[in-house]
Structures are given as structure tokens and as C-alpha cells.
Amino acid sequence: MQLKMAVVQIKLPRNKKHAVVKQMRGDIALPLQSGHDIRVEHGLEQRKF
Image 1 (tube, rainbow, N blue to C red):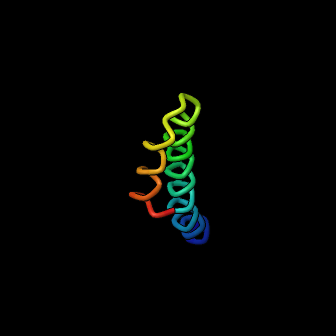
Image 2: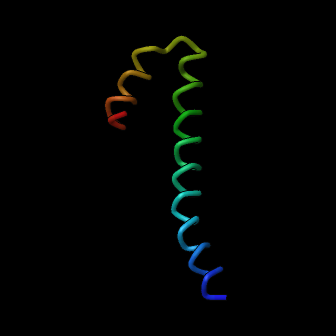
């Protein structure tokens, strides 16, 4: 039981990070599709990709 809980505790931050990255990709893709290149460049600078 403790091993299962440890595995869950390890996976939780990883899953959260993947969710955040997925959201950020969407935030970047939407303006690019609309042709707002400058806004995307500014967003990338803020997030330090």
C-alpha cells in the first residue's frame, strides 16, 4: 500500500507539469493561428522557453 502511495506521489507533479505544458502550448498556438506573431514572441519571452 505504501509503495502505491509513493508511486502516486511521484506521478502527481509529473502529470501536473504535463497539464501545464499542454495548456501553454494551446495558449501559444491560438494566437499563432490568428496571425499574432508579436504577442506569441512576448509570451515566449515571459515563460523563458
